[in-house]
Image 1 (cartoon, one colour):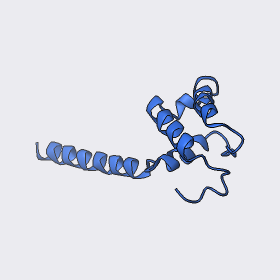
Image 2 (image 1 turned 135 degrees about the horizontal axis):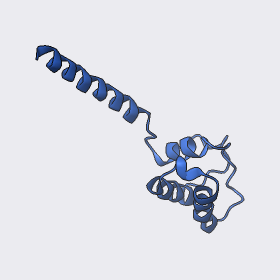
Image 3 (image 1 turned 90 degrees about the horizontal axis):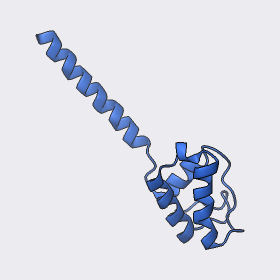
Image 4 (image 1 turned 45 degrees about the horizontal axis):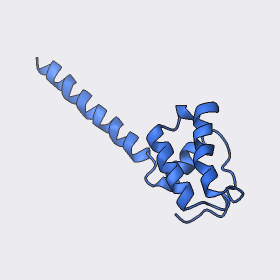
Length: 98
């Protein structure tokens, strides 16, 4: 019985460690979410050629036709869209502030 409790305790501690590592690696800001999720499939584009009203359809197209729904949830897509519409980076190289 003591071994079982020890095993159970060690399992709980191990899971807590895994969860802590997972949470620490999540993007913390909308900018980080955009950079992390979008760059997992392609280089970050210059968005200076897009109008504000074109950004939501672009993100939604990526999710529905290009497989981005595997890495970007609907909630994350809305955060990314809001970020892009309000903080549209001119280019990945110049996007150093957040």
